[in-house]
Amino acid sequence: MQLSTTSLIILLTGASCVLQATCSICPYNTTLCRCHHDFISCTGLQSMPRLYTGPEVMNVTVIDIQTGNITSIPNGSLPPGLEALAISRNPVTEIADDVFINSATTLTELDLSGLKLRQLPYALLRLTNLSALDIENTPIGILQEDVLQNITMTLTYLRLENVSLLAWPRAISYLRFLTGLNLNGNSLKIFHRTLSFRLIHYET
Ligand SMILES: *[C@@H]1O[C@H](CO)[C@@H](O)[C@H](O)[C@H]1NC(C)=O
Ligand SMILES: *[C@@H]1O[C@H](CO)[C@@H](O)[C@H](O)[C@H]1NC(C)=O
Ligand SMILES: *[C@@H]1O[C@H](CO)[C@@H](O)[C@H](O)[C@H]1NC(C)=O
Ligand SMILES: *[C@@H]1O[C@H](CO)[C@@H](O)[C@H](O)[C@H]1NC(C)=O
Ligand SMILES: *[C@@H]1O[C@H](CO)[C@@H](O)[C@H](O)[C@H]1NC(C)=O
Ligand SMILES: *[C@@H]1O[C@H](CO)[C@@H](O)[C@H](O)[C@H]1NC(C)=O
Ligand SMILES: *[C@@H]1O[C@H](CO)[C@@H](O)[C@H](O)[C@H]1NC(C)=O
Image 1 (cartoon, rainbow, N blue to C red):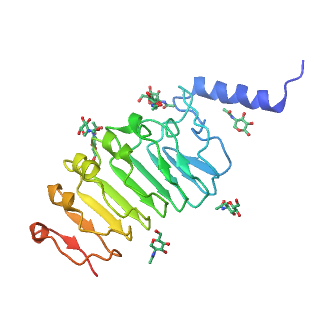
Image 2 (image 1 turned 180 degrees about the vertical axis):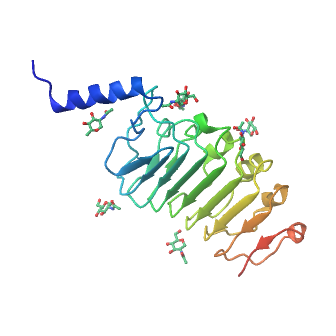
Image 3 (image 1 turned 90 degrees about the horizontal axis):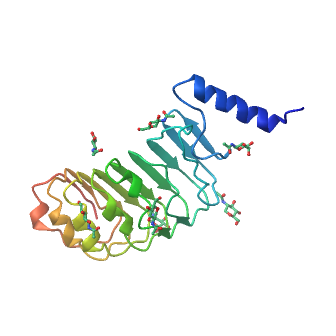
């Protein structure tokens, strides 16, 4: 009986999983993504790759997805237990409401830059430990107060640079623990007085 190369590789991977405490199967099995320990970086993706799960799959805490053609981040496309996620320079218009459900308590840093979102993703409502939110070069326009209010208890850093803000986002005054705020690149004229004692980085 002859083993094909593929089944030999699978056998060897399986064996190393039994022998070693950690395994080498990357949650995203595509040449466009590189897995280094608990970190994945991807470039040039046309859509979110199929997600592998299971005991042999590496536990990943940080994902950085750069320039590509992804238009939506569907439910079930991210591995569980993420601590930091960056998705940048992809024409993303949709982020599923439940996409962060398995990282709800662990995700502390989220960077969404150069996407095509027309509003803050409602998926943010799931995040109970988010400390830094960075959204840049994305045509959001109006910040929904219900979304912003829900993350106010944990957020310390908020960057909304060049997101076409039309009006001062009133809900920002609920962000009690904010130590950094950057609203550069928006044509805002009115500055909110309640924030004046805080660390603000704002230029017109
Ligand atoms: C990933 O983490 C889970 C629980 O946190 C653990 O049971 C599992 O063994 C870990 N997997 C690897 C490959 O380290
Ligand atoms: C990963 O992709 C390679 C190449 O497409 C394939 O040979 C291999 O079986 C895949 N691994 C898993 C675990 O699906
Ligand atoms: C996106 O897709 C277009 C064609 O559909 C292609 O020309 C372009 O190179 C792709 N960009 C990336 C970063 O993959
Ligand atoms: C999204 O996926 C999670 C598990 O991956 C599941 O519990 C949840 O019901 C899904 N939500 C929707 C709207 O499909
Ligand atoms: C929340 O994030 C902090 C790091 O900022 C981490 O130490 C803590 O374990 C997280 N909480 C949960 C419930 O995962
Ligand atoms: C707002 O966040 C809390 C936890 O901080 C959560 O229990 C609640 O369901 C969230 N609201 C919505 C509308 O998801
Ligand atoms: C501002 O964001 C838009 C996309 O919403 C982008 O086309 C433009 O280049 C950005 N401007 C700067 C100065 O980066």
